[in-house]
Length: 186
Length: 186
DNA sequence: GCATTACGTGAGGGTCCCCTCAAGTTCGTA
DNA sequence: TACGAACTTGAGGGGACCCTCACGTAATGC
Image (tube, rainbow over all chains, first blue to last red):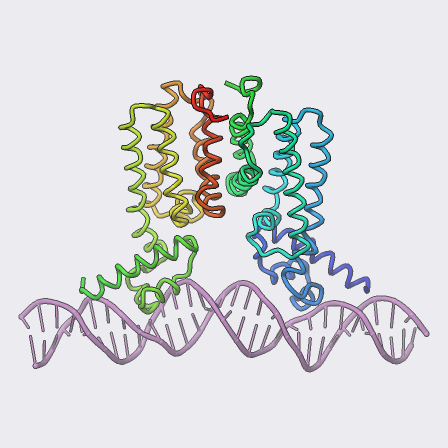
């Protein structure tokens, strides 16, 4: 690839990240090209479809979820591992609307992206299973409950600012915990 | 008003309800006119602006919140009054995306609509204050927490179906309650 | 039944976006 | 330096939507 082409590709990815974060995955491609300082034709040269662009952008960002999983596994306390994982995931999803849409399926994902999302789900299930095994979380809490919890608070965070979901999450954790009196405030 | 004009106005409102429920308050006006079987010009004759249409449509629907409040006041148990109110509100908001957007401020509301929303908030605050007074809810739960809770679960319900928010709400209520062991399952 | 006028119509101008492609430009190499 | 391949350009056709307005139609009161 020619040097100028590589530079353009990089700038396009960078600006795409901005636009998708702000406007979601349906954001304007012409806007991305404008911000990157190239013509719309160049954008289409590098990424023939919107999905090609999304596909080049999101999977690397999903790698962060693997890190959260590693952190959770390294944490000796199963409850803290679980809550930390959920908090990390939420912080990450609320900061990137495009990522959130990919996760929640608002946009029909490419195979590669779908695979990355599935791995995230599997990771979450593992962290949750450990908490269940340790008896620190109610046994009737399902994987889907947690997915929905993350989903709901992510959508809230996108609209109501970062601190809104953090307070709510505290209450929810207290509802999910088996030994609430240990840590509950008030 | 001429009879045919009244009929057209009714049909427009009816179809607007459908489109706004499906697509949100930014839904297509041309689509509304198409569904109502009138020309776009007729729509503009009756409702010169999008907001005029929204304003004719939503405030009556917000009246339902007053009913929920009355129900809550009639309920002797302060905790059940509170939870029932929240459940009613959620069921109502998740069924109507337009209403949800009006509440959450996704659309700049008219004065009349804003007033109706404010009344809803005041009602909620009263129900919550009663629960606080009765000591059945944690004292550190703020009005804003509950607004955010309703907001988050409404957004979820819009995307993940009606049962998703109901299960989560159960867990949250357990986290908000002071005497959890009384009713908590598992 | 007729005139009046309230009402309905839809083409059309404006904006934004998607995507293509023929022509022009620049890079890298020999 | 000069050439060919690689890359960029942006006008333009197509679609959706917003909103207006000059004109046609038909409901209603007399």
